[in-house]
Length: 118
Image (cartoon, rainbow, N blue to C red; front, side, top):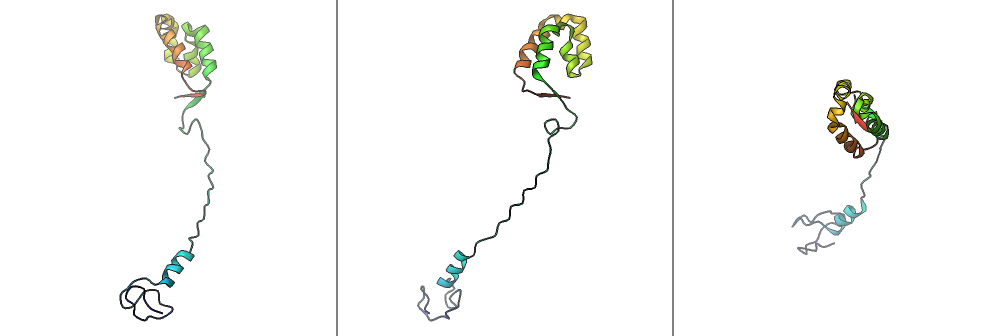
């Protein structure tokens, strides 16, 4: 067998030419024939708890919205969320003089269902 680059005679089983160092046709065939073995082992056993963040409680958007709509001046939706301090503040100020109540009605509409509260 002869080298394609320098034309000198080389062994038939040679992977590279000993004279010029160019890979032979045997080497190129070996590289194309060898396919890598890929093993995919996906054993995902993760479970999401409260959106993946521990310590958060899931709340239903529509329950909170109905509570806010009908009993927002008394802070019922804040008590539902577990925000007792804000609930007492809404209770004594009439939903923060109806401004906080109105803002909460609108903001609850744009929250995902369920939403998470710390």
